[in-house]
Length: 310
Image (cartoon, rainbow, N blue to C red; front, side, top):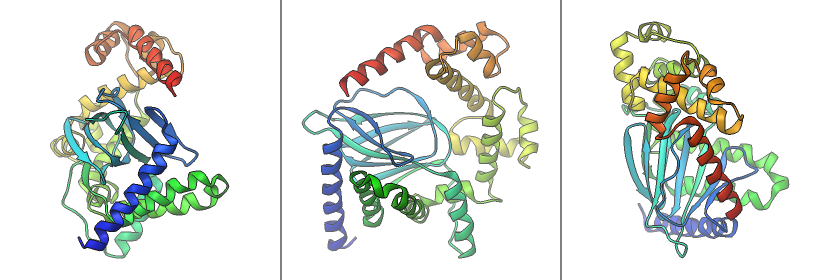
């Protein structure tokens, strides 16, 4: 990296910090009018709630972060970007954050259609593929990626321009992520004919047929893989076997139904495919640490507390 590049990165980071400080007056996650973009601030090291995240890119602007995606841990800091290419259970906490020097970051949920379209176009141009097989990667963010993020955040002060300029900048961001040091993960997951893409197809089927029982052998046939190959590559991408992933997918969806749709535990259990409410409650408590009812009440109370702070 040249001195000019280092100076550019320092300047862009300073501008991003200032913009985030002005908008994030208290700890929390701030949704923005730009689809998929969230601004995040933490003033302490408290661990966030576990959730099932969609594919995303998370850029640390100030401080450092410890994240768990699937069964793997990642530590990264200022001007570094984590990219997760598939839906996956996750949790994170800021490291050594204080009110005087809060943790600041950007989170952009990726648009799968844009990623897939760009992968097809890039394949025509002969962009080399990567041998990486994990569903998550962390790397330094270069000046181009940081500058693109800065232009996107600056749009928040020009709301009338968002409908016209945001789609262009977002497409550029997706391109930079695909061609940058974390791009191998996204390309392998979204390029037809790769084992990773077959895993993505298996995940898509599981999400669309959440309430249906399935056998791994049948799922493997659906995505044109042998059972052993599906097991191996599924675990490499997500950290879980297909059965473990499916169980967590069901539990998180049931939790969402109870939290956001006000479903009772029994109806949520049936909606995600459990035939026995007793079994659902037992597995829910084992995974989340409390009964469905008590866990839902606790999470609602925490959400209200955070809303009062913001």
